[in-house]
Image 1 (cartoon, rainbow, N blue to C red):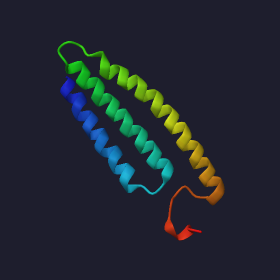
Image 2: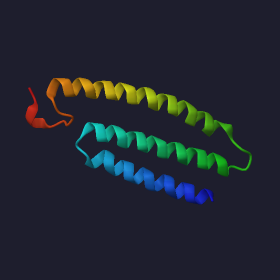
Image 3: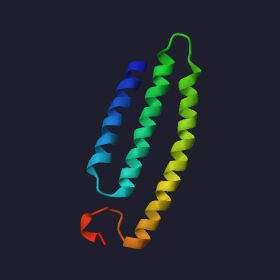
Length: 98
């Protein structure tokens, strides 16, 4: 059963990476980055579950990663709000350089 979770984590990682690289909208990139980190968390928990003696280190890493992800998302959203107020757009294009 854990093999399905590993496959699911890899599929979600690939989709989030695609969204991160292809999309021009920064809000969509931020959401793709959050999905990417969630897939990494799923991967780590699945690997920890597969270990013969249960290993608590990956679980602690995931809990710490959740805190870091929430705070990073908050900072990213604050920066996106400032960017939108300043330029009126959520995309970075080279034609608006000053």
